[in-house]
Length: 418
Ligand code: GDP
Ligand code: IMO
Ligand code: MG
Image (cartoon, rainbow, N blue to C red; front, side, top):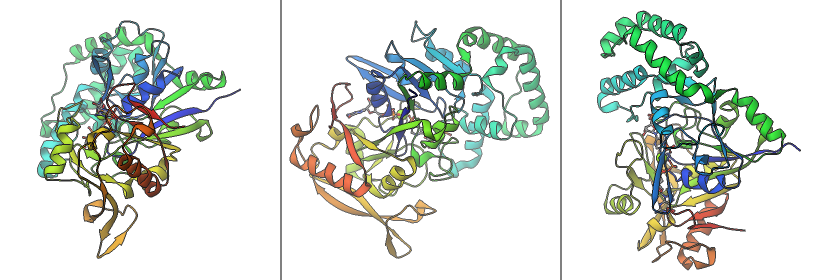
C-alpha cells in the first residue's frame, strides 16, 4: 500500500531546532529529503559529545540505514556540498541529488554580497551565500541545473555567454568574470565527485512511497522567511512552507501525511526585518546567552524575543500543522516572568492576524509565571507546573497540539506526548 510522507517545517524565522527533530525522526524513517533552500541553512545536531553542523546534506545522514535526497527545489553549491560530504565516508548508495536542482555557483555569492553592499542600511542581512541570485536565475530561466554537470564543456560555454550578456552590470557590481579554462576544470571536478549521486529523485521518492517506505521531508528556514508568506522583502528566496515540499520534490498534496511544525518556546531571527516580539533589553540578552543564539552558518548573533502566538497561528494554518514540537523550553528556566505576544496593536486597534506589513505593529503581551528547571525532562509529568501551564496556554492560543517538547540539545532529552 502506498504511504504518505511525514513533513517537518519551521514555524518561525528559522533555527527553531529542526535538525534535532529531523535527526530524532530519521531513526524511524527510510528516506529523509530536503526540498528547499541551500547552504544558507544550518542545522546543528548533538549526539553525545559530538556536535555536527549540516547545511545541505539532509539530517538523516546520521542514521546509517536512511537514504538521503536533495530535491529539485534546492539550490546546490557544488564546492560547499563536496566539502560537507567529506565529513562522511559512506555516502554512496544513500545520498541522491536531483538532476533538476539548480546549481549555485561562486558568482551567485559575489552578486549576493554586492547587492547587500549596495543596499547599505536597507540590506536584507542575507547569509551572503548566493541564495537570492541562484533562485533569481532559476525563475528568470537563466539558471543551470545539476544535470548539466554531465556536459561540463557545454555548461562552461553557457556560463561564459551569460557573463558576456551581463558584462556591464557585473562590472558595476564588481563581480569578476571567471577564466573560461579554469571554470571548465572546476566543473569537471564537480562532475567527478558528484556524478554517482545525481539522479531523478522524483521517481525515487514516488517509488519509495509506493513500496510503503517511510519518507521524511525536511524543511529548511522557517515560515516567516517564506518568499510569499513571510516578511517580504526580508525573507529568503524559496518556498519554505509545507507546500514547497510538493514542488520541491515532485509530490502531490495527497502524498503529504503528518505535518510537524517546529517552534522555539521563545523566538529568534537573524538578519534584518520586522520582529514584533523582539526584546532589546536584558531578557533578550539572557535568551541569547542561555540559548547560545549564534548562527550555525554565519556565526551572527541572533536577535531574541518572546513567543509570538499571532504569527504562530498564521504559520500553523498555512502549513497544515498536525502537531507542534516546542523546542528549547529549558532556555526559559529561571525567568521570573515569561511574555507571550497575543495580539498586535495596529493603526490604533488590536488585531489578531498577521497584517501586510509587520513593521507597523506593536506587540500586546500576556505575562506568564516562570519556573525553575525543565532542563533534561523526558516526560511531561516531570515538568514544573508553571511550564505545563505555559504549554497548555500556547496550545490554546495557536490552535494546535504540542506533541513534542525538547528540553536540551541531546537526542534523548525529548518529551513525546501520547
Ligand atoms: P535548525 O536550523 O532549525 O535546525 O536549528 P539550529 O541547529 O540552527 O539551531 C538550534 C540550536 O538549538 C542547535 O544548536 C541545537 O543543538 C539547539 N537545541 C535544539 N533543541 C534544543 C533544546 O531543547 N534545548 C537547548 N538548550 N538547545 C537546543
Ligand atoms: P535554517 O534552516 C535562520 C535568513 C537570513 C536572512 C534571510 C535571507 O538554519 O533554519 P538568504 O541568505 O537566505 O538570502 O538570507 O533569511 N535565513 C535564515 N535564518 N535560519 C536559516 O536556516 C536561514 N536561512 C536564511 O539570515 O535574514
Ligand atoms: Mg539553523
